[in-house]
Image (cartoon, rainbow, N blue to C red; front, side):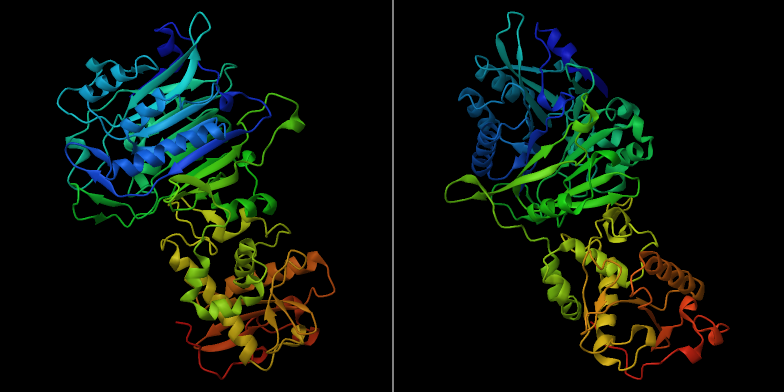
Length: 586
């Protein structure tokens, strides 16, 4: 794998490098459009691409027209998608990128003969470039290409449309080594540079990621690295290892955006026209990864993104990962530049902002702006967890998915004593671990995080059950009774229950996996949180645990009277067992 400068490649043909808006280090945001198509796909020895070529051509053509209408500075389609017939018609019809834009068009498979014919058919309109055929092995037939389409200038300053075609360099792996037996591997990855020399961009194709480590340092510095895929396992350890290495390297040396664009979830594969579909049962996991200081976790940024299908997570490696909704759509974003060579106050650190989502209208055969939020999956998840739905009724009414994450973390005691515990970067359900499984409670696009979700919503079900059924509560939370409800607001952020006379209260449930030391530490942290907040309700803290099937109220040392100071945190004399049997929340 060789990193080839686009400027050098163009110089060989008497062309200047393109001046792309998204590589200009200024205060202006650029417009990005990403198309995440649905299946089925056709995969056999002759072709890999969409099974319904006519439908894909219509969707692809309208996507390019939308990119023109919206002046998309960066437009992307995933691996193996775009039909060559549709690309040829678009180019000959003048549907081409704006002068400062780059279109990254993941194209259906092709062969050397088919690509040579394509070059001849559009020769009057577009210069097609790629690495020399002699660089490629001759024992395979199919090419997996991405077409990098842009305008540049000739020496006489007239415009030239260029289609720079890059081939996949490394085959994907499956049990039968299907692609490996067919793929004619390329050897080069093309790297764009902004005219100022500050910013760069490159594209890799799916399993290129498996062999990218030797050149990774040339692709993840001050760069937008675009990773297009048709991938049933996009978060598999081998496919994400280049991201892991990037994110574990000093942030100053890996200041980059990584844009992973896959097909929509639940791909179906056929091996012949009319063949029986083989379901992949896959996630999509299209994600925009951002540096720590180039993206915001503020509610006023995260919540509007959420409502349009861009879901926030914060990585263990201290980067931000914005996961796209998993169904077919075109996503429109406004993205600040990685670097802003301007006055400091002009630098935008909010990260990508979703400003539009388009869905395919089969009647008009066009991408239509979608006003209704996509389903984040949480309401559907609660259908099978009615106890939690009832418990959260007072929170769900606010229609705030971030409040759900916070009240559940608070109820489980899984927060720090910091005054900023409620920041999404500190909420454990919003943390993306190295496996890249999304464990958000309010975002349920797959079942990979369901074990975590079940444990978390079980906590709120227990608390609600106690509120409705337990008649006696410790005196520091006087007023808690069956009329109390689970509530959460930013104003009373350290409390999760409100009594009928409007007293905010913090009730935390700890299951029987917590050791006595963990209980003590948790109690100390929660008490300290309320003490530092300093309201007149700062002592309204109750910690509940279950032992041998019975409910116990944990004695909180800081709240203990002087004559009870010798009691242990869980001294039985300070505990009121609950006689009712354990509720069935199944």
